[in-house]
Length: 336
Ligand SMILES: Cc1ncc(C[n+]2csc(CCOP(=O)(O)OP(=O)(O)O)c2C)c(N)n1
Ligand SMILES: [Mg+2]
Image 1 (cartoon, helix red, strand yellow):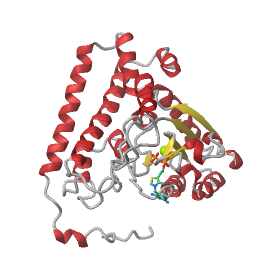
Image 2 (spheres, protein in one colour):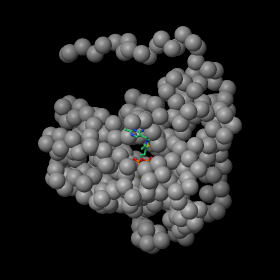
Image 3 (cartoon, rainbow, N blue to C red):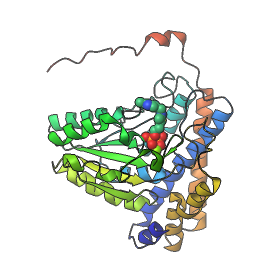
Image 4 (cartoon, rainbow, N blue to C red):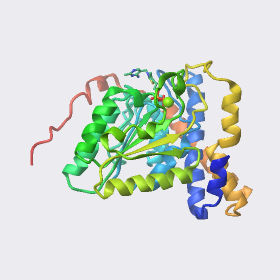
């Protein structure tokens, strides 16, 4: 609730607020649909939904510019949609079809888009963090001013390789924003059961990397913190840590009955802190939009999401011969 009061003082424009509402709702409805398709047996394997955390990625994408890079974990559908990847291609990948971003061979955790500078989708906890520093290194090497958003969870923040990465990222002042999405749980383990120093934004102190904690249920606060972090990185000052405090409403993955927390805890977050309701309130109370305007956005999103599900069902399964493709790069990059 505190976040809601803070944000209501914001002077974000009507268009800006509507765009956040649209983008967060797209992620939520897309994820709900993915959950349904999973229940129907149309999606197999692992599937980690992003419901509850939408303001994190939408706020940070609002602070990003064309050419900036992003890399994340297995909880990745929201990141793909927020950076502008096509919902049809994402849903078709979830159902393992030819029309998917990895031509049906990657699934939920392994999708990429060179065009949108989205580098996955990684299933091994913590392993995408050094890769993110590598992406930032490539920009530093090329002497452009792009930055990389490297997302990981509160659980991953206890991984050793994260600290090896912090060391090198600061040593070389890499333009990398380490985004810790602290949703309070790592599978069934609450942060307080696993973590001796819970202020994750301070984890860079030993390396000289600044950090701050952000209310991740408030898209405007996330955007503001993102802009600060981006400015820091672009000006050549090196990496920055954002600990974004958020919450996942669903289980860790589709196979998690979530018995490690109470229904009341989840309901309280939904009722008091929901990021989409927050922007909806700002739009209505600030008279930036009417109920009718919001209904028409809802309708548009329903159409996009339903179309993605249709596309995902109709797209054929990959041909068996595809087992032999995309194993090695077709072209080996040569030294210039
Ligand atoms: C190296 C490694 N260890 C364990 C796992 C199993 N595992 C998958 S997700 C996860 C929890 C990670 O939690 P967190 O980093 O907080 O991310 P969240 O799922 O909350 O987004 C674990 C232990 C794994 N995938 N990789
Ligand atoms: Mg977590």
